[in-house]
Image 1 (tube, rainbow, N blue to C red):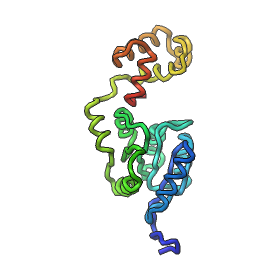
Image 2: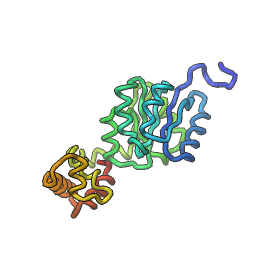
Image 3: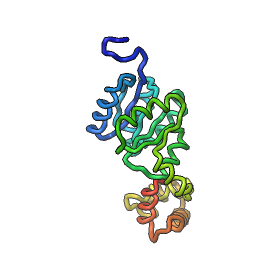
Image 4: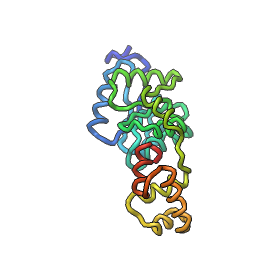
Length: 210
């Protein structure tokens, strides 16, 4: 056993979190576990895959809402480029739609940040053995909420409209006609049961569909 008391083989963890204080606290707490070593820390989603290929972690612990790219996008990319790395999503936002998207992206676990660090450390160990670890309350909510009713294109149009962009702006960004954009917006508003696109965006975000 090495002089610092750790086992010869530790679970290597990559930590992706944009809030510096939270990232430092998680790294410190996980580092206190005898069998876990945080080998890389990143603050941006578009830095996750590069760090994983460089440091070869066993488990990537990812937040969802990150600058550059979301943790969900990074999870899907890790599945392709670093298939031996298990992904555990750790987020403030326990939204049913996020859970479904995380599982579709190949994540092995999904936890919210308000749980005790002992549970997080145990989840890291469990996903490494091949288990899927999901917050029980969130799993139940996801089952009752049902699948995302929005198509991929409807999601694209809602995302493009979040900053108050005009229909013409959205059409230009997505290379669509203005009438097509209006049709997608109308469909998304109907499916979300809202009155306008601002409410549709808010509802889709709340459900974790965007």
